Image 1 (spheres, rainbow, N blue to C red):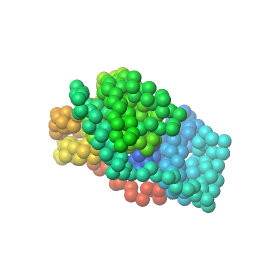
Image 2 (image 1 turned 135 degrees about the vertical axis):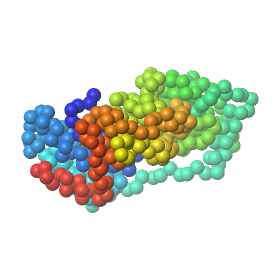
Image 3 (image 1 turned 180 degrees about the vertical axis):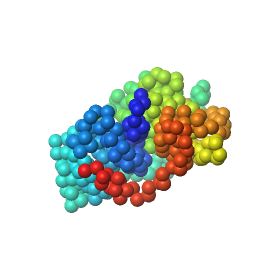
Image 4 (image 1 turned 120 degrees about the horizontal axis):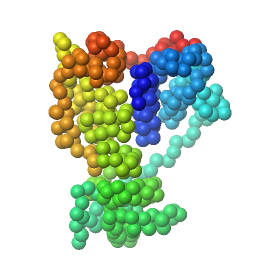
Length: 377
C-alpha cells in the first residue's frame, strides 16, 4: 500500500529487492539496492519523524535492513574495511541490528576476520569429460524407447551416494516425478527423474533437487540442455514461488510493488522499481517513451530466466510494443502518483505535473553516502 511519503514507498520497494537479491546470491545487485536505500535514508527518516512524531536525532525505532545486509555482503566478499565503515555509519545513526552485540559487535568480528581470514572453501570441480558423458547418457535415456509428451521438462540425475538422504532421494525420484529412468553407464546406475512444469510436479522437483544438488554426481537439465546451479536456484526461487502461490497472474506482480505489464517481474521494470514510464524524456509538452532503452533492460535482466516455463520473450516484446509511445505531462504525473522523482528516469515530474531534470548519478557511492548522512547526527 502506498503512503503519502514517496521516500517510504521507495524504501519498502528496495527492501523487497534487497531480500530477493541476497537470497538469490546476487551480491552485486544486492549491494546496489542497499546503497540506493542508504542514500534514501535522510528522506526516509524525515518521513518517519513526520508520521510518528519523533525527532531525527532520537534512537531509530527500526532495524536498518540495508545497513545490515550490506555488511553481510561485504563480509562474504571479504571487503572488511568497507563493512566496518557501514557499521560505523549505523552506530553514528544510533541504529540497532537486533543482535546482542549490535553493530559494535559486528565491527569486533570483522576486525578478527581481517587479522585471521577464513580459509577459502573448497570449490567443486568443473565437470570432467567423464561426467559430460554421464550427462549425455542421461539425456539419451529420454529418447530411447520413450517419448515425453511435454512442452517443457526439467530433469535431475544422480548416482548412488553415501549420503543419509540417498534413500529419500531415490523414493522421491521414483514416486514424485513425471518419468523415472535408471540407466547403466560405465558400471554405474544413473537415477534420473523428469518433472513437468505443473505445480505439484515442480514443487516435487524442488524437494528432490534440494536433497541431491550438492552431490558431485548430480546434474540438472532443462529440455535436454545442461544447466548450472545458479540458473536452477533462480528458477526455484521465482517459479517455485509462483507454484506455491497458486496465482496464475503471479508473473505480472507478486505484490503491488512488483506490478508490471510484461508478465515477468524479474525484469525489474515494475511499479516501484524502474517503471516503464520512467524510461522517457520530455520533448515540448510530451514525454517520449524510450522503448529501445526498455528493450535493452529486458534483454539484460531476462538472461537468467529464459529457461523458466512461464517466460515468453515474444509475448513480452509484444506487450512492450503495445505500450504508448508518448505521454502527456499530466498522464505521466498521474502514473507517478505525484511522486517527485522516479529512479531510472531521465526526467522527474512533481505533484503539479512540471518536468525537471533528474539529479545526476552518483558514482563514488560510499563517499556520497557519508556526505548524505553527515547532516544527520
